[in-house]
Length: 428
Image (cartoon, rainbow, N blue to C red; front, top):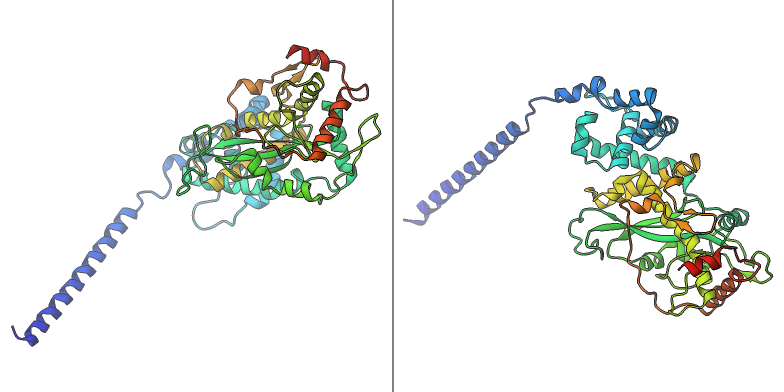
């Protein structure tokens, strides 16, 4: 075949190939259009939400007939629910369109609170609420974002004056008989599905994937500060060492942090501090128990007195997860959504402790008249897992050791002892 004829044949074949590709593309588009064609725009059972949905039926019945059941269902009273809805309505109201009507803010809040309270999956919730599962997914994120935006500055603000910090320390002394304490710190695992392409970053020592909630609480079980950035493979000490809390304590630049002054009925100045377990390094701003074996009686009494204060943070976690049991499930959300939900739960927890401070006190560890602690109901159920507690390296500062010894002597002296401490040590 001569070159000229060969060129003509090649040109015709190329043209045919292009036509074939165009035909294939057109067929794929036609199949896609047929596949995306909806038989109905709104399923009939969803369209009957106003008549048969849980928000418009069951919740009205509970509100009118059984407020206690309403409280159990929403984890807050009708009055508290109405307050939250009113506060969030401006943030949750969207402009109406010519398509389907928007969900009302009260329904969005109710769906979200029920998910937080029960941990029920969206696909299971959609039938009772008559809201599609994909819509619930977006609603929960929107409501949690609204809760964080609305309540963060109100419910998670640290004191800014020395008097306010001293009042927090006075509350610790009155409730838990431990001086100069500002807060108790601890970390807990919140289970979630494995985020894509993260390897073992979220896999913890308990054998599941998680993020870590690391918090500091006040003497009345409210969160003063929280860090939800940690991944499951980290430890308490790692999160704390990289936190803004430690940086502020170490550089002494926390606004209004009280200056050292004497312990009650004493004369020597002592800095104010937070309390933690043995995972942390001892510093003047962080007191922890004695960890050596063969402790003296004075050291055991100090450990007992400190543990009474430190277990407040465990009780705070216990109250929160019993109210919002989504934290006890393995959340199937994106990790950023999991962190957002945890933030919302913390703020709602603080809000409820502010409005109803004795509401869940039956769940708490209770001190009997003889000084003995009776474990609270929260310890008998499923709970968040502690982060791994490892023996801290021997990096205790000389000043920290001196301060701990000083507090130990104060706890064992007439100036700071309590009547039942010797009996409690004998019971151990």
